[in-house]
Image (tube, rainbow, N blue to C red; front, top):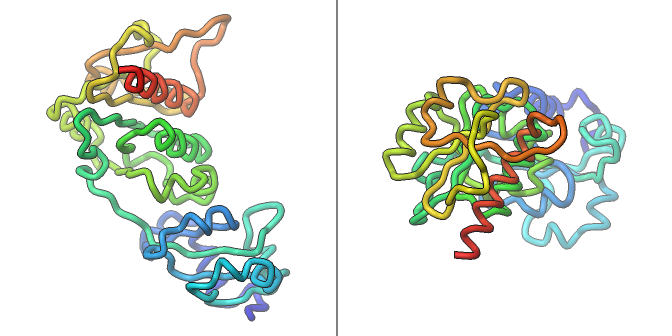
Length: 258
């Protein structure tokens, strides 16, 4: 039973929660809560920490593997990043996808390309949406928020373990590679043309930009076409996650009807 916040393992978990650098160095990240715990592929599970009460109420979860450590309620409350801790936390091995895995083997892949997204909730929502819409994968510029940030992890609702993603050291080179493979690249842009008039059934990649500044001029110029989601009233733009959702699901709608 871990009864002190000065315990070496507790300090390690806190570092993983707070530092992207620490996560990369150790190749580990943290998940919390019963729903996310159930989603972890067994081969990526590193260590499991629980309170006694959680263990007593959920013994069936541990029929194949017992927890590594029990944690006192008072310590777990300080460790948890949620207002109502459920009593289970795990460290998980990171998954490193290749660009090939993200582009997928489908004949007509659907890709989301994110440039400098900074909001953890937006990124998590986009991963979840991408899975729901049947996307092949997500490509991100290196300056996009860390996908293993605890807020991102929570908001993916488990999609993190199933949706391939790739951080590009040079996002412009990767976009060129996407185009070389015959995948048409669309930039979500205020100067774009009618969003619903395009055909997204062939291989498609949607560019989604930073929440405050949108796409850079350089990556916009690389797109095969610019598109604009129609908006009424005085609204000029949509939240990045909402825009990505609309685009991905329009592609899915077209593909289901073809």
